[in-house]
Length: 224
Image (cartoon, rainbow, N blue to C red; front, side, top):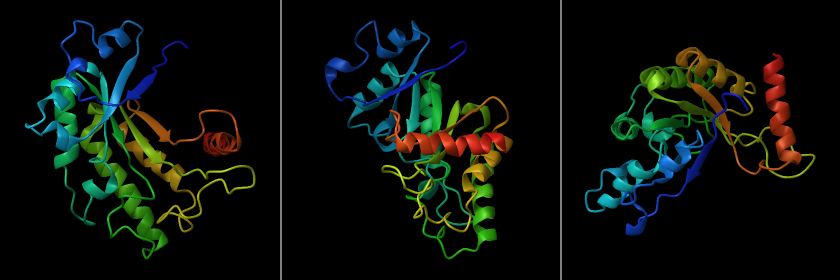
């Protein structure tokens, strides 16, 4: 497709035979086909000087990276009025030093949330928390981010007859049933037009009940 970008994510190997010693790297091979190739990156491993091959391989082989955990809500927003930018900043700094793009992961999930973000909050409090977190995080990084996974793994697993959205998608369900729409609206407002926004999930790579549910969710939001 004209102007399309394909992003492939792999596993960072610690093998000495796979790290930047060849003239042809994965990222250079991908670039010849106008592709990005990347990995989920652990910021602790990047900073671990006792295992220097991790950072060397990650930077040599990949043209895009995403934080394995350090940009998720729990690590980055441990208290209602406190943000810890250290891990996520580390991912961005490492990527920029290696001329890599960053796909931020993620802005809304039902796990790895801080303890304060829970179902005891009112609908209004949850909406404010969602909007505020996304606006603050996305605005901080701006166009330094190539993309964000805005909502993660919200569509129900399984065959026909399952609800469209996971009913246990805490703390957002059932109090904020439009949380996907709200999340993407907040992200776009904060990011501007140039940062790519994604819904991220698994188990919908082929046609089936889950992929149908995912398609229907975004048809509804597109029409609205």
